[in-house]
Length: 315
Ligand SMILES: NC(=O)c1ccc[n+]([C@@H]2O[C@H](COP(=O)([O-])OP(=O)(O)OC[C@H]3O[C@@H](n4cnc5c(N)ncnc54)[C@H](O)[C@@H]3O)[C@@H](O)[C@H]2O)c1
Image (cartoon, rainbow, N blue to C red):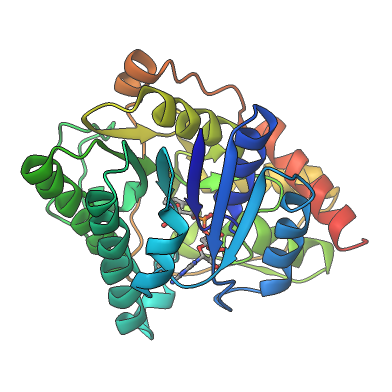
């Protein structure tokens, strides 16, 4: 297949591209290498991808309709991962979130309609569950209680996709990722921040007094779910992609300390606005319909990140 992958230089996009290329698909990457975090990391990921002749990069913005139109030509699927992905960055940059996560998403969706692309798979998020307290979080639960602009954006994407499917019959699959981690991970996420601080002998700021709990999902498992969604191409679905087990934040920290071989000094801080206390994914639907079977737990996944981090930064 020829697949347009937006956000190809991003954490999840990079790993997804590698797997698609390895199995023989042609991948058109679209990314603007924005400076939300160090663009060098994006350039280095991209440098790995362009070694493969089946990969083409279009350096451009999903907010520019002409770029999206050009990138999508002749594609069999669109896998849309480009977005501003942090919850907290939105506090100071709300209009960028509306531009990229809403207008950019619309550009992709509407171009899928115009070019009659046979399937759109897009990144949603566990953030759509917001303040829901019934666990585990299931796709059948109501999702009208978002606690952040980012969560609201992702819910809005799901609604737009639903409306477009109803109006035009476009096959759309939304994937609600739960806290993804692994090698080449994002510098704004806890695993990266904590590893960096521990290896530089600095204290960790731990929000929610360490009482938060997360369903942490290893990158390879997420990519399995994305690729299965591309292949199944259901008419209209939303899937939770999580590990299906919830870890205490302090156990995550302990796993990082163990992998780094050092104990960290910890500053226990209050929860930050927009944060949720607990996420726990019900993944029974993805198991049944995508054959999704997460394989990696934090005790195995965290050391893989720390090993990559040491090598990449020469520590
Ligand atoms: N990583 C997670 O834990 C997680 C959890 C839930 C949902 N998601 C979603 O998964 C997707 C991928 O996340 P990620 O962790 O790989 O983030 P990332 O920031 O590493 O990747 C996003 C990529 O999109 C690109 N991009 C952003 N705006 C763009 C624009 N206007 N035009 C073109 N490219 C643009 C960025 O340069 C970046 O390379 C996002 O939609 C995110 O919201 C991620």
